[in-house]
Length: 163
Image (cartoon, rainbow, N blue to C red; front, side):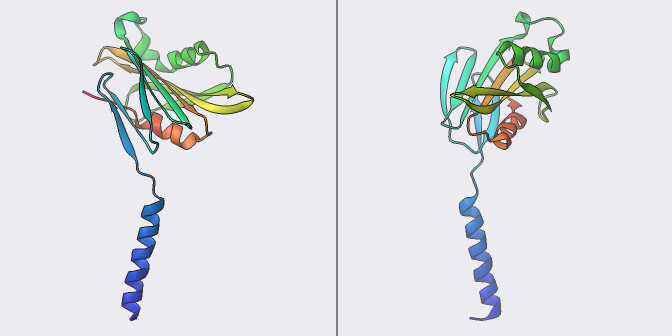
């Protein structure tokens, strides 16, 4: 085998190895609520109500609720950080820290809380996203049962409003 041929075979093998371990990223679109996010997880969807949907598997649970702007205080969209903190507390979390803004929605902010089940702690992302254009506000939680903070953050930061 010539050195050039050996190099080509090596490159092909390395490429094949990286492709086989790469996890496919998928976009989950919820047309009903006009929102989407990305994940590397296979998720099953379930419906809570007309304004609320969820997605889950053994390692993640995601709940999204869309509320009409008219049901909320007048300055809601201007204080997403405060409302995200209030939502975190209202959900019963006492152990939490600021997360930050997300890149795709201007009026959005999230916190990272800690929840427990059977003496096991795991992170929960709690997000509020205001959409004056759609005349609504989204409240979202991402429960990371497997403690995968990177995937939870990736889901939160990939959140986009659909037209």
